[in-house]
Each structure stands twice: as C-alpha cells, then as structure tokens.
Image (cartoon, rainbow, N blue to C red; front, side, top):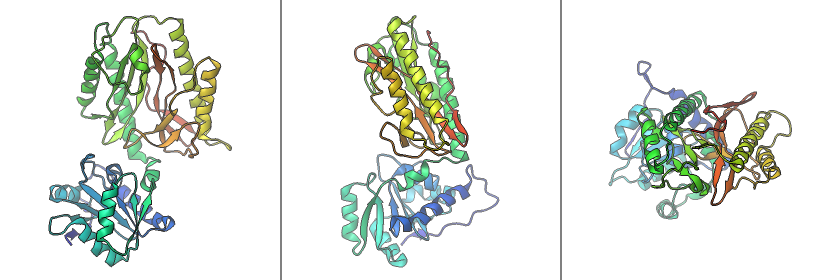
Length: 385
C-alpha cells in the first residue's frame, strides 16, 4: 500500500486556513460513525472532499479523489498528479497514492483488514451503481450501506472562515449589479449582458458561482432561462440572477429592474414580490422563538401573494448556500429542517406570469444568534435604469 502517514504541522508554515478547523471537521465526522452504525464512510462528493480536506482542485466531472473516514483515521486516495498538493494543503490526512499496480480496491482491502471494517457507508447520491458493485465484488466480507447527507449536515452551519468567504462573494455580487446597470440599454442582447457581468466578476480574481440567468421581458418567466440573442426593448423588464464565488464559497442574488416606467400590472407584481420577501425575512428573524418552523416563512409569503391575486411561488422560497449554490437547508411549505445560527440561506419569492414576465427578488441571508443579517445589499426599490 502506497500510503504516506499524516505529516506533523510545522509551526513555521503559514496556511491560508486554520488546519485545526479541518481536523475538527474530520473528528466530528468520526464521532458520528457509531451513531450511523457504520465502521467507515467512503466520501466521493467533491464538495464534501473540499469541506474535509481543504482541496477544491479535483474535477467535478471525473473521479479524481476519494476519502475514507474510519473511527480512528482519515485516508485520501488520489493519483500522482495531486501528491504534492495534498502533502502541502492536507497534512492531517493519510495520503494513499493510486497506481496501476496498487489500485483503490487493493488499498481499501488492506485498510479494512487493519481496522476491522465490516460495515462501510457510501454516499448514495454521489457514486454510481457500477462503482459500488465493482468494489463489492472485490471486497468480500464488507457490507456496503447507502447513506444520505452525513457530511452535508455538517456543512449546513458555517464557521467564521466560511461566513467571511460568503460575505466577500456577496460584496462582489453587489458590485457586479452596480456595474451592469449602466449597460442595460435598448438593443443590447441577453448574451452581451451575461458576458459583461461574468467577465466583471472574473476580473475581480474570483469565479461565478453558477451560470448567470439574464432574461429580458417574457423570457424571464421561463425557469432557468438560457440567455440568448434576444434584444432588450424599452418596455422590457430585466431579470438578473447571478453570484460570485470566493475560495469556493458562493453567493446568490436576483434583482428585477425596468428599462422604462413600468405599467400598473408590473408595479403591482414588483410591490407584491418585495413585500412577500419582507414578510418572510421578518419571520426568519424570529427563529429563536418557541414554535418557529422554517416552512412557515414560505407559507406566509405565499399567503400574501395569493391575497394580492397572484399564484404561490412555483419553487422553494429559498435554499442553503455554501460550497454549492444549492444545498441544505431548504425553505419551502414542506420543509421540516431546523434553522440554526451559522446557516446561510436565500430568500427568493417571485411572481410568474407566462408570456408576460417575472418579478423575482433574492438575497443571501446569514442566520445569526439573535436574528438575521442580509449579506447581499443591492437596492430593492423599484428601479428604472
């Protein structure tokens, strides 16, 4: 087995992140294995690997790394391309280098024998049936147990470094909104605005957190509209749904603006959406009170929209934001999750009218011990550019 023992941290070496934080995450996960009734957990989600091992370089499309967490140890399996990176950035894990003569299955077999692993959990949403079947065939005597959201639940509550990264991503998103408004002129295309906005974000030495949704007029009523060569008309509204990513952590914001003074129907849509969001935010502020239920935020927003003559929001009212732009927890009429300080969520009501358009307003919000903090701060008053 080509495994290199975890290195001892050198006090002289300066790391961007607190290595102890990652060790603590692994220890917390190890302590939960008994409760999950498994001897170890095979982690294949690249986002979970980044969360535990401080490495975000592994490809999302390919299986370039895996982590095995046992009750006593943590092993990271990858190939020689990443040996130096793992050694430098993740000295608190045991690096196991995969080569043709010593494949993953062979190394796992030795570890399982050494640590007496009989029940192995795997992330059922992040590994293929074929991968699991191949391992089962080669690793006799081990029961493979599907698991859900074990690491994802740890990721729900952000620590101080994660919160700071998301705050910076939100600040860049606000700058992006201010920047792009001056380019919203009749005749410009959705694709041109998308390119300018995303290029602006990338030139801030960061990344976009997802493919931006830029939609003009009735295109805005199409969920996840793919920006096109549609030209902006004077009578159009503009939907801008975008975000930035700082050190792997995302922001998410939506604003709806108008090119000319909107008619009465659009004004009513806008005012109703803005008020629905305020109602939901006001309720989230009360998360410390007895009887609080996250789903009620969605119910209150939807009840207000219906009272104003509109349909309920056709999607969840919000979702968690972190290493992924969509993660736990979720805010919907069906949510049973708990809301806790340190969670970061979006609140994004919208009024959708086919063949007319949509008004959606979305902010990224930090749940604090005493209430909430809006992390995206772009203006939300009805804007005519």
